[in-house]
Length: 247
Image 1: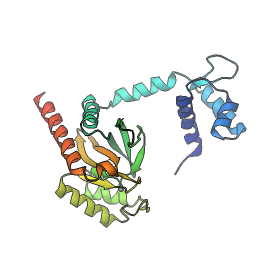
Image 2: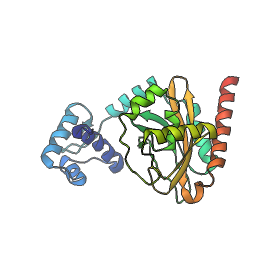
Image 3: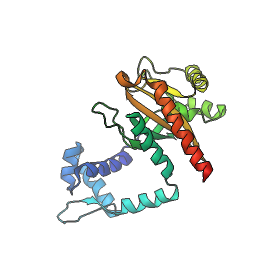
C-alpha cells in the first residue's frame, strides 16, 4: 500500500536530485504535475520541519543539509561493509555486466549497492530499485537463506502476478526453483520480471545480514553465459571469505 503524502515528500527530494538548483512551489507543482494547493502545503511543511530552505530567498527552495546529516547518522549505525562494495565493483569489472548487492524489503528485493556495466546496451539499475523477491534470481538467493517457516509467512503476502511467461506463479514453483538452485550452485533468471534480461545470483550470509549478489544483463549476451558468470561470482566470493578468514 502506497501512502501518497509520504511518497510525494520523497519525490520532492528525488526532484531536486535531478534538478540540482532551487525551485519555488509553483515550479515543483508544474514539473511534477501536482495540484498547486497541495504542493504549497507540502513544501511549507517540509520547510517548517527544516528539510527545505531558501538559499536565495524569494520562495525558491532547496533541500537543506538536514537530509544529509540524518542519512549519514543512519548509515554510520549500520554501514554497508566496504568489503562488499569492493566485491560488487570487482565482479562488475570481471563480468562486464551490471552487478548489485541486494537485501530483503518485504515481498521485494532491494538493490543497496550497484555498479553499472559500461556496455552501451546494459541493465540500468539504481540503489533503491526493487524487484519481486520470488520472481528474480537476486530475490530467491535471499529466500534460500530463510527458514521454511519464514518463507511460508512471506508467500502469504506475495501477489503472484504474471509479469512474464517465465514468472513463477505459485509457491510450489518457487520452492522447486530454490531446490534446483541448491543443486546447481547458483540462482538464475530469464526475463521473469524485466523483459530481455538474464542473470545469476548467489547468497551472501554476512554476519547478521541476509544479502545476495546478482549479475544481470541482456539475454543476447548473458543467457548462455550464466554458468560462467556464476563461476566468476563464486570465485570472488571465495576470495572474499578467504581474505576475511586471514584477517
